[in-house]
Amino acid sequence: MNVYFDNAATTPLDPEVLDAMLPFLQNHFGNPSSIHGHGRQVRAAIENARKTIAHLINAAPAEIVFTSCGTEADNYAAFGSVRTLGLRHGITSQLEHHAVLHTMQALEKCGDLTLSYLRHDAQGRLDLAHLEELLATHPRTFVSLMHANNELGNLNDIAAIGDICARYDAVFHTDTVQTMGHYRHDVQQLKAHFLVGSAHKFHGPKGVGFLYRRSGQTVDALIHGGSQERNQRAGTENVYGIVGLAKALEIAYRDMAAHQQHIQGLKDRFIEKLRAEIDGVEFNGTSADADHSLYTVLSVSLPPSDLNEMLLFNLDINHVSVSGGSACTSGANAGSHVLNALNADPNRGTIRFSMSKYNTPEEVDYAVEQLAKMYRRVPA
Ligand code: PLP
Image 1 (cartoon, rainbow, N blue to C red):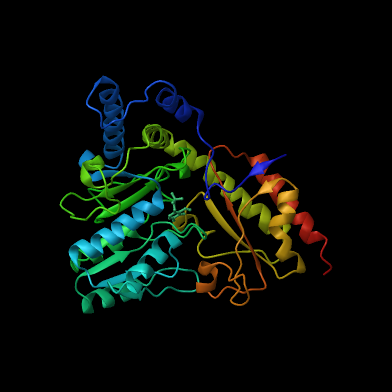
Image 2 (tube, rainbow, N blue to C red):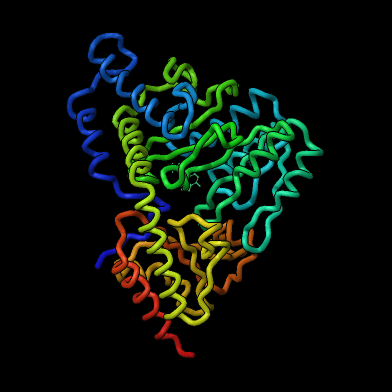
């Protein structure tokens, strides 16, 4: 068996998505900025994709800006808001993806803002009373807090965070890269100014994403040049990517309930089997709590063992692809910044299993068996 449990890193392309993209790789090659027929045909495809995405998240088409990836959309929201609006304070968390954390730190380094980090507990649950405290004393704040943590699977209550931000008139950006296509986002309900999507996280192509930018939210472009994307993002559009992005999101919404049930079933099976097979197994953050975690991600904490350093390698040679992560504060390998922020025990090993609609219960059993075999070999 050859199994792939690294879907939080990237997902395989859905064949239906490929079919939608192919005509734009094979035949429809026009530049969407050209006013002739070849160009207009391609322009229409981009605008249809924009309408599809807008409709799915209950936004207006003009609120969707296509980007090259989730990271670019995060950078655009942060740099654009802070610089255009002259915001002088930022709030984020040490648990954010580097796409946000390093971006906010870059803004601080450039002298644009001072940064506050939201407190969290040992399981990575954010302290929303602290958010209120910080906002009460800092007017003109840019808040960036993710929906689901990509390493732990922890889900943050972005509805509550949005309400708090609205009370203090803060600009709220939420990195929804791991939840776009896995939950229904409704921007009419959520008090967020920015949301982010990245196609390769929901069976679309790599190299294309989008930023939802609430209407009236003025931000300067990050990339300057031509007048593409209504002057908000210059550069000839990734047409087949944009078509694939919209198709992938459409499929994700169409089949969401069935996929959620299937994947949650796989996650429950993982938890049950790991508990049965490996003494001392634990789960990082709120990963094993179905009500407070992303159903596609399970972060497993393994008991201290000499094997932990070779965990990923040993799984890989047994044809199981997963991500690792360790808490380690010294040496060249600084480990996972998320596990370090949780003060996780550096002697324990961490594996992130992340699942998709293509995984099966048999693959779960195989992966657990490979892991359990390794631990059984360890002398008590
Ligand atoms: N934000 C989160 C939470 C992610 O998990 C990732 C990718 O893993 C990104 C941002 C970056 O997305 P992209 O790969 O599209 O740049």
